[in-house]
Image 1 (cartoon, helix red, strand yellow):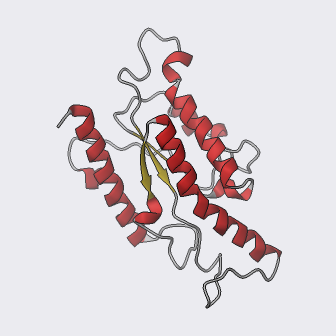
Image 2: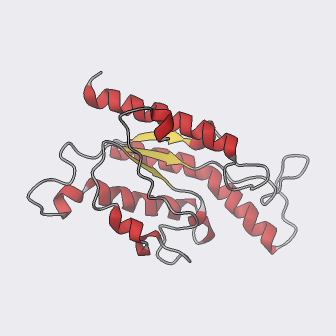
Length: 193
C-alpha cells in the first residue's frame, strides 16, 4: 500500500491474521500488543479492515456490532483520554473496508451455483459463506451512520481459488490499488485539493 501511495506516505500495519474482535474468540485482537500500539499513534487516515474470522463465533450482525464498538472507541478517543492535547486534533479520518466474500474450495458451491450442505463442516462453511456476503451491507451502514469513508473489498478483489478465504497475490494487488486511490481521495478532501 505504501508503495502504491508513493512518496510522502508511511503505512503502519497493525493487523494480525486470525484475530477476532469477539473477546470470546480463540485469538481476540484486544489481547495483542498491537491493540495497545494503536492507541499510541496519530495518523492522517485510519483504515479498518476486518476479515471474516469473527464469523466463526457469531453471525454478520454480531461481527458488525463488534466493528461498531471499535469505531465508537476510535471516534470518542478525544473525550475518553484526558490528555493535554487531543488524540485526534482534527478528528480521525476512517476508511472502513468490508472483506471479500468467503467462497472457493473451502466453501463449495455446486455446478448449479447453489450451496451444498453434505456434512456438519460443509454446513458451517456454507453458513460463513452466506454471512460473509452480508458484511458489506452492514459495514456500509455503519460508515454512513458514523460519517466514515467506505470501500467494499469485494468490488475490487475476490479470494484466491486455492485459499477460499484469503486473497492471493492478484487480489492483494487489486485491493491495494483500490485502497491507495481511496486514501488519496480522502487526503485531497482533507487538504481541500
